[in-house]
Amino acid sequence: MPSKFILQPQFMELALETAEKNKIPNAQSKEISSQELLQANDVEKKWGEKITRRSNPTSIYNCHGLVFASRRTGIFDNSSVRQILEDDKYHEIQKEDALPGDIVIYFNEGDIEHSGIVITTPSESPLKIPLVYSKWGKYSEVIHLQNHCPYHQSEIKYYRVVR
Amino acid sequence: MIKIDPELSKYFIDIYVVANTPTYLYRRFRSQEIIRDLANRYSEEDLIDYIKKIDSSQNPSISDVANAYAISVALTFKNSEMIKKLLKSYELKKLEWVLHIVQIWLVTEIPTTSSDFYVETTRVNYNINMSSSKSTNTIKQVRLKNDQS
Image (cartoon, rainbow over all chains, first blue to last red):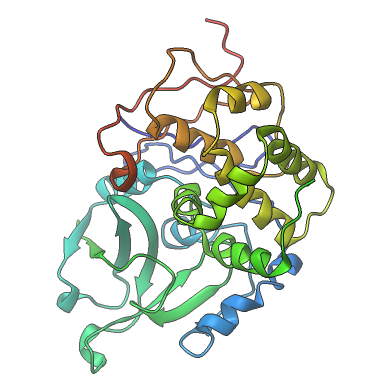
């Protein structure tokens, strides 16, 4: 049974489709201001030494919005991400084959919890862990090692568009 | 009147601010003992009044919003019929994921009634794997909106 994420009408949704013209529900969140998000400095304290923040906090887009919607909006449900992976011809690849530009998806018991973009090959790191940039919820875009983030690490898959 | 300790609020902010999806928020909060404590300490009415108060404020602080989501997940330890009744006539203005959180809970709980859940919003269907909590539950489709059919 496909799930649908449809927000209340007052929330702004953009026209967003997969390569196969399937609609992707989305929303630009305005729940909290960027100024208020700057108060979330415990995230900095907790992760600060392990990450590089590369943008100001914003709630307009989330991780999937960064990876699949050019930072214009947020995508919030599993089925939409799965639809994008299928329609846009993403194929799973092995971690050791990952190259800059490939994407990484973090699963938690089948749910898609997070996504990001690979920026270094695993072979560049002594522990064979690639650097990734991703958007952490309503917080900032962050450059981090694949395993240095607040998302479940039990099932991580890499994908590349193959046409 | 619900009072949340500022230290606890900071902890809620940590979870809220990095949540990419309502499912993440639901899972993370629901696994915390403190959320169950909030549910035990306060009535359904108290919890919903808190959410409504934050939802109707003009510029809620990040701790207000994070607290409201923690309280939303505390609702999911309460009686679902009562929550449905209390949320039925209220239209959320600010807090975008509260209904999604309630919906995630309703589609994963053991059905106790065949009645549908009507609130004034558009329809949301969830199909999530909550195998850690109730893997054998049947997922039922829940109708939202003022659908009189």
